Picture 1 (cartoon, helix red, strand yellow):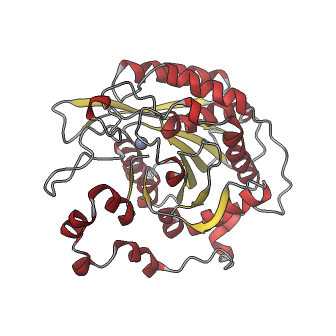
Picture 2 (cartoon, protein in one colour):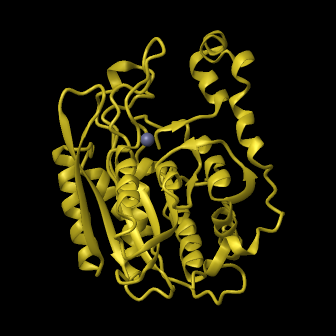
Picture 3 (cartoon, rainbow, N blue to C red):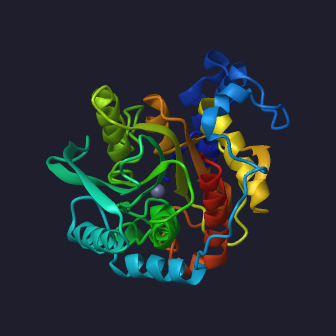
Length: 355
Ligand SMILES: [Zn+2]
């Protein structure tokens, strides 16, 4: 995850005086109020039925118990972190691509590489990036996305001592945990009982940040390069494509023990029916980490997907992981196979409800 947009969090970082200087809240209004203009949060309000369409899941679906080995997911997580940093365009990223492509192909997934070059504002040269899509039931026209970013940040920008920024940062729960969950899920995808096609999408370039914030009001580096490219290509080619994405779920900072998932605010305001559907699946799966409360607003890869009309939600517990976020301590030791398995159970419950 790259960024939160909740003003209070920014206030923590900048200090009250600077906050007033930058935001001039008396001129702009409080940014936190903006979402409320679009409709109040009320999880008990029944959703309009037509919003669910044919993809309505929920308590009535006959849900099978799907095998998911949390210990093996942790093994994958460690395997990826053992590669060291996996920054876009580096050898570490190339090694990871080789490992995951082989893994998914061996389990029957169809892997598509979306290769492109990107120029980050603060860098002199372009860098090669690759979004990976692993397709299950590739012939189905109605499709959903399960996604995570799989690149790691070049520097541990939240370390208080700048000398630590350049030390190897493995980003275990920030992106990598999502990849590990999908690697484990791949074992059951070939014959999975669902009515839709499923694409695992691994985004590159989410973390390719060298200058997180600009000085003196100049903006910092561009976030979400991979998901922006993916979304733009989807929008540009939509008329020619034989499939449609009906929903997308993004996983980020979700694998730590005791994680709590309030509803991320962008997800709620851009994809409310999908939030309801997924949280219903969480209730059906008795996943106690999902909470029916509106959480903070997070900028993440789901924003680009919503921008091009793919309803997309972010399963994230930023507050619960803040102390390790973009720090060297974001290591596999902070993650828990049982927590990954609980989120995976919600995913498999949700997928089974899609007819
Ligand atoms: Zn991050």
